[in-house]
Amino acid sequence: MIVTHLSLTDFRNYRAAEVALVAGSNLFVGSNGQGKTNLVESLAYLSTLGSHRVSVDHAMIRQGTDSAVIRARLEHGARQILVEVQLNRSSLNRAQVNRSVIKTRELPRYFSSVLFAPEDLALIRGDPAGRRRFLDELLVLRSPRIAAVIADYERVVRQRNTLLKSARASGMRDDSLSTLDIWDERLVAFGSQLIEARTELVAELSPEVSHAYTSIAGEDHHAMLGNQLSIFGGRSGADSAGEEDVDAGGLSYGRLTAEDAAAAFTEALADRRRNELERGITLVGPHRDDLVLELNSLPARGYASHGESWSFALALKLASAVLLRRDSSTGDPVLMLDDVFAELDGARRIRLAAAIRGFEQVLITAAVLDDVPDELTGNTVHISRGTIVEQGLS
Image (cartoon, rainbow, N blue to C red; front, side):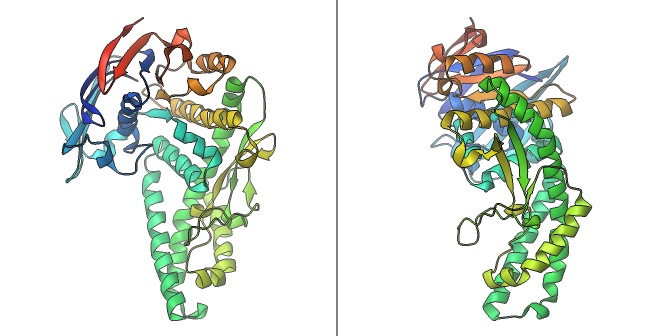
C-alpha cells in the first residue's frame, strides 16, 4: 500500500498543505523547524493513533484553532481508500473512511506504517518502559486484538496496586487479604497472555534485527534480542517512587507459552507477596519486564557507542517493517525515516539505501539534500515555514 496524496489542515505549523506522493522514495527537504517531521508524524498517527513526540493529541492542533484534519489517499493495486481523522481540542476525535464515519480506533486497520525518528535512540539508551511500549505497539499493529489484553492487564495492575496500598496503610495481614487472591488470578490470566505474545514477537524479531543491523553497519556485531522476565527473577522498571529496580536475572531467549508463564507467574507472586505488601506495589509481571538488546553478548545499553546505538535502533524499526510486510495482505507498510542520514557516514548511507530499496514506499526527511543518496531523491518536496514551496520528480 502507498500514500498517493496527503492533505493537512491546521496540523502543527501547517494552515493547509497538499502533498503528492509516489511509489518508491519521497524526500522532504527543509531547514530544521520548518515542518518536515510534521508530515511523517501526521501519517504515523493514522496507523498508531499517537505521536512519537507528544502524549496528547491537542498538541498537534495548530495554535489558535480548535481542530486539525489529517487526510490521506491510499492505493493498493486497483483499490483506492480515502482515510481521514479530525483531532479536536474539546471533543472526541472523529474518523472517516471513504467519507463514511468509523470509530477512530478502527483507523489502523486501513493503514500501516513504521516510523524511525531520532527519539528512537531511547530504545537503546532509555528506560525499560520505552522498550515495552515498542513491543506492545508492534504487537497491536500485527494483531489488534492484543490491545484489549494489554488494556485489561494495565487495569488489573492499577486496581491491585490500590488494594496493596490500602492494605499497607491499614496494616492488614497477608492471610486476611482474600480479595488479593482474586486480583492475582486476573493478573496472571491477562499477564501470561501478554508474556506469551511478547516472547513470540521477540523470537521472530531477533533474526530480522540481526540481519538489518548487519546490512546497515556492514559487519556482523551479533545483534541479538532477549527477554528479561520478572516472573523468573528479573526485575526491570520504575517503582512507585520512580526509582529504577533492575536485576540481571530472568533472562530468556525463547518463546514461552501462556500456560508455562502462568505457572511461573503464580509462583513468583506468592514469593513476592510480603515484599509487595510492604511496598504497596505490584512487583511481578509484564509491566516490570524488559527487552534485552545485545551486541556481541554485551548489553547495548551502556556498552554500545553512539553509532552502534543509532544503527541498533534503526535495525529494530527495519525489522518491524519486515514482520509487518510478512503479515500483510495489503502490501508493505509505509517506511518513514526522519532525519536519519545526517547521523550516518557515507558508507552507511549507501548501505541503508540498499536495505530500504525493496519497500513499496519510503518517506525520508532531511535538512540537507546532499546527505541523502541520489537514488532516494526521486520525488523531492521542499518545505519552508509550514509551506510546500516546491515538489516534483527530479
